[in-house]
Length: 497
Ligand SMILES: C[S@@+](CC[C@H](N)C(=O)[O-])C[C@H]1O[C@@H](n2cnc3c(N)ncnc32)[C@H](O)[C@@H]1O
Image (cartoon, rainbow, N blue to C red; front, side, top):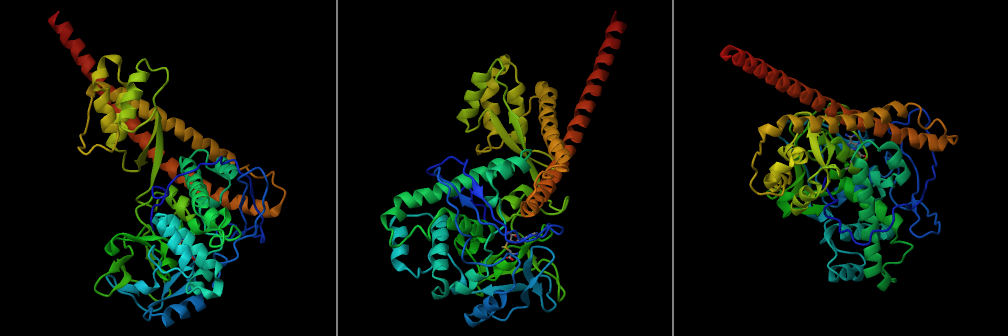
């Protein structure tokens, strides 16, 4: 599934201090872990409070009610007989389960292009599609609008069976309020990414509204094309859209294929297969009847999976997991101005995040650390360090400054420990958090979000613990090496005396 934040065009950026009104229609106080949470989020853009109804299409995230209608419609529309069926599953609510033995290396699915939604799909309301194209609306906002347009037509849309089986409220951080993001994700840098994403969605919607919808209200009435429905359609795109490399890298919603859940243990992706002319994937392991069949949504960290898909894999199971470590240039630095100038020149700032993995950290992080700790007499190297810290340079040069190594490692260790203490605080306090909530409905949602946050923070802290261990060991070795060298030098000096 595709990474989207880069594709959204940020335009108007309103204040994100909007209040979200949340209503729950069901309560599952004990088994909150993956229970559906029904809520309608209303964003108060201006100061007036507008409580909107929940999305009138789609279904509960774990509902199989519309699944058989979807399967029937797909086979009537050209989907060949399948070796899998939609069923309720342990991982991911609904998923595709093997009906027969499936071999490793087998091609599955074969969804024909006629059943795939792309930016070139035909609009039921042709005039609306034309207006968007004339205004050169990029693929993501175009697809989001298309989905709403088709959904609002209910049974008259050719996609009605597909849309009815989509979740009414996709799991995604788009549905967390600002207060919830602040409360549960304070320690994690994913909070910033979520705020940025919500801002982008709101900005994109506002841009479309100002530039296009307000000029064609008969084609895009506000009762249908509003922030509420855009949050839904973007939530669907973030959690279901795929990029098909062999179809010129086109973004597509692929009904049926998008019922497959992610596993960190498989490495197989959806793609268009030119020989069979359909969207397929090739299994990288065998499956027995009754087993859930998985694909990979890409090499994403747990934070990225939570951001787009609303779930966190079990601790230690995601080999692509990473945590963003923030590093900062101190304002008190004697060369603050010069260093900042060098950083800015290479698209960086005084505070920068770098991904740390269980296996280590990138060369860019060390280059940034060298710059932060470098003394004024190294000002001629600032530029080189900033260039190496930015991953935008085409020539990847492994910069090393042995004279700064110890100080740079100590700086990274300090930053790492300051992050760890934030995670420690959150994880310690999370135990007693939310006991103040009196409404059982609110408690249910909070426990669910809190559990996701605890899972994320535990996995991110685990990576930081590992980095802390490596850094401490390196520093210890370095210092004991230095001590030995010093003793040797002292001994030689005495001998010569
Ligand atoms: C492409 S859809 C997959 C089909 C989805 N399960 C459904 O019933 O519509 C992606 C969504 O499935 C769920 N999902 C996928 N993989 C998961 C996993 N490994 N663990 C938990 N939920 C998962 C998440 O809710 C995610 O937003």
